[in-house]
Image 1 (tube, rainbow, N blue to C red):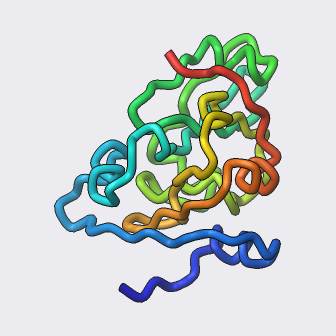
Image 2 (image 1 turned 30 degrees about the vertical axis):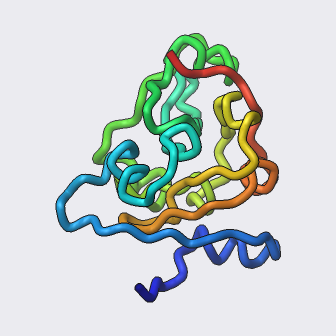
Length: 158
């Protein structure tokens, strides 16, 4: 399947970082992370989803966590020095990130938001995240994703 370059891929290309494009069929509507991991034949522990939250300060934060885990809002707030954070409404994802639900990549958002990657990623060599549109994932080393997103590693899952 020929894939047109997404903003996320162009950014990775510009940094001359190697990555693999992985595509999957999305016509069935199953675009949640666990379904995607199954479709691409990857262990759910190596496929991560991108979540966007807002703090009391109104600042936006990005969390990269395993697809089969849930963000612990208390741990997340602590990780970004906020009293409280809340997930942004799905209808606002594109406004803040430039991406849509199911195709939100941690790479290449409208702004470089503070990003936290769950510390479980430090146990992996490579990580799979959204490539910037539904049906497209990218796999790259955890170190390279951390470098591109400037993420910190913190335990933020329940």
